[in-house]
Every structure is written in C-alpha cells, then in structure tokens.
Length: 148
View: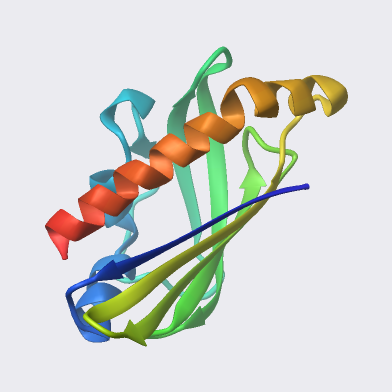
C-alpha cells in the first residue's frame, strides 16, 4: 500500500473552506484539465453520507476510466472520506481534513492506495503513478489558494 500526504494553509475560514469542499461539483475546479475529468452523476449542492459519485477520468496509458466513489465519515466543517468503489485502483481511501491554523485553515489530504496489476502496478507506481498523484495534488494546492 502507498500513501500520499499533503497539507496546505489557506487564508480563509473553516466555514468558507467547508462550503467549497462540501459541494462535489467543485472537484472539477481543482482537477488538472489534462485529466479530462468529468462528473457523470447528477449532484446535489452538498454531499451526504453514503453518496455515490461517478466520474470519468483520463489515466495515462489506460485511457478514459470509470471511477465511482462513496462519500463517508462526513463531519461537517472538519473532515470526510472518499473511498473508491469502482475505478482504476485496487484500493483508494482519501481522507480530507480541515483544521484551524495560524493564517487561516489547514487543508489535509491523506490518501492510501494500491495500484492494480500486482508487480506491474508497483513498477507503474514508481515510474508514473506516484509522480502523477504528486502533480495532481500540487495543482490542487494552487487551485485552492486561488479559489479560497
């Protein structure tokens, strides 16, 4: 299993950060354009416990992939989890946290994931999956700073 952890301080309030994060449609605004990210599910303005969200996302070498996440463990103004139910990874568990911090709020991402294809997945992770995820989360950092 691999992990990715990112923390970001944004000059905003927990309320404003939560207002943005709780709307699943805003994921489009923080995803790099080259991933050809598309939300398929009709979405409400606010996530709810057990909500399933279906996306299409461009994965290098694999092409356009279906990804279905379940939103769970929602604690308003504090955290939630999205867990892949169907998608490109063998396992994907993404914790999103919001904490008070000097200068605003700290946005926390902790992802635990297992690539598909066993040994080939380990090689793919070393060659490009890990780097791609770093790039995606670096993009999110700049997007959050602009949007919040």
